[in-house]
Length: 292
Image 1 (cartoon, rainbow, N blue to C red):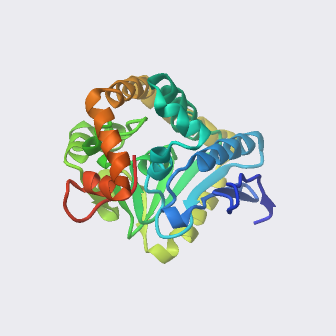
Image 2: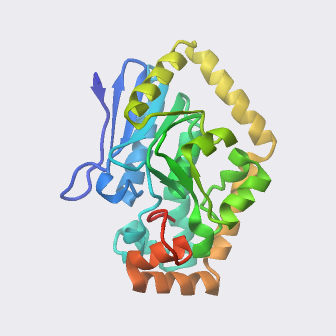
Image 3: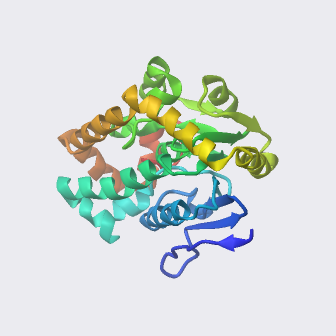
């Protein structure tokens, strides 16, 4: 890569996210493989800053969003949330603080990614769960490795999906209900059949395929590509996508602060990540990962 963008380091550790530019393509890498790329505060703040830098660089025409390690992203960092020690996360002690936290870190960067001027491509491997799925779905195109699996088990945790409910727009209303209410996990081939991803490739070819797609996109004149993106996004917005996301966000805030949700959150904090896994898996084997 020829140019490197800014990164944000967590205290005493490697940067949770990095990005580089090679010609017209920027590659943004989630860099918390030890935590299945769970989205911590530091990662989300770094993503938000990187998107601002990318948006300002007119030479960048395509962005590949990828992840180091075995998994794309297992969701929000529940360990950080349950600890409640990080300043942003500590806001969640009150409903007003929880709203502010989720607007700033869960809603804001995702909508910014969705509306980004360059065309965006998600390269997904392994677990892509809850907020990980939300992140991938904000991209214009999705390439999946053959080991990718997509899930959103948050309903079992008393949350209403995640902050932006992407499933009805990606899967259709009936399949979205089944996916959310029955806690389905979609393997890559099924996700492609349903239109959630554009193409599936062997795991070893994932990064190369995403870059090949980026090179194809870069052949389109920049203004033409931007106009196509604006037109298609404008179409779904006029069908109600942005309004439905805003409605869902407020429903999510309401349900997350009901006694049922608060009691479950307290029990979850007491039981740690093993309790989270049991809750998400319905009490049987095969949990989807530490997601929210």
